[in-house]
Length: 388
Ligand SMILES: NC(=O)c1ccc[n+]([C@@H]2O[C@H](COP(=O)([O-])OP(=O)(O)OC[C@H]3O[C@@H](n4cnc5c(N)ncnc54)[C@H](O)[C@@H]3O)[C@@H](O)[C@H]2O)c1
Image (tube, rainbow, N blue to C red):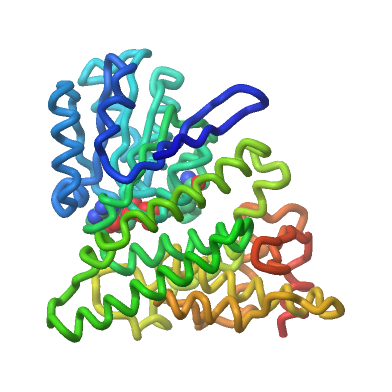
């Protein structure tokens, strides 16, 4: 459907293939003689489209490794396991390591490939919405270490990222909506008319899902809901990828503009840390689905609402075009959880220790309007005082 290039200066350094099906994957792999695949075990088991990917890999005799994707496995130990497997399977400097999975799989495989034999090439087939609109684009790789999230890692670009909505049909609804939050975040940063379209599509899908549940008494017809909207989803995913690719092309190493992509994230990291500390106690209303009390995308959604509150207070003399209520309404209509159970005072200490804080100041990304955000440097105390 579309190839989106990522540049460093005039040079194309990575390519995002936004497709409607998996039919083009084989052609993308053709230039690479020695491919090694790392796949999330849950994708191999639960995702019907994984069989199609496996067929492509088998036709080319690609060796495959399965790994467990969870935050507690997102460690140097797992990266070492990938490196050991590459060594045992004779991967050389000309290898291409292909990651098939969500953001955890792509972050770890990209990191392993970046340090193996001082760096071999890698590529991604992201299988979550979050990875398609965010994690698998832009070259940030890494693992968690000593309770800090993504604290070890490098920025290195994949050869290509091949994405299509077909793989999303098996994704649990909460994971899908987690990615939807990141997609809406992207359109709050840069709109191009997509924010309203995305809210309309996702709200409609949520409504269909609820109606379907009532009518068929099926436990989870979510996959059908995704399947009915492949084309619209593919267009929106491509639009989000274009925004991220553009920002990364202009500021690969996050010296300026790329900070905008952190909209909601300073609050989100504090929310995730507090939820980890209290065992998700404040999220006990969540269904017992084996997932964490709050997912990354849900925390980002809560963070966006809080960023809108801060923007409202910060720009109080301008007639702020977007309000906390408007942001929350859009997210809620899509079925995304966005009510934060923690006070900003509770989050303050963690925000001060955020890995992106510099000299006690944090770049808070403030939404002025849909498609218009600004990174403003504030101390945590200033932000808390404004939001009180
Ligand atoms: N590199 C970046 O720029 C960047 C940006 C945002 C997030 N991240 C990282 O991404 C990670 C979160 O990504 P994620 O939400 O994709 O998480 P994930 O990889 O954990 O996937 C979420 C869950 O869905 C399962 N899954 C994946 N694809 C599936 C499919 N098609 N069908 C059924 N189940 C499937 C996984 O096994 C997992 O249980 C975090 O570790 C975060 O730090 C990285």
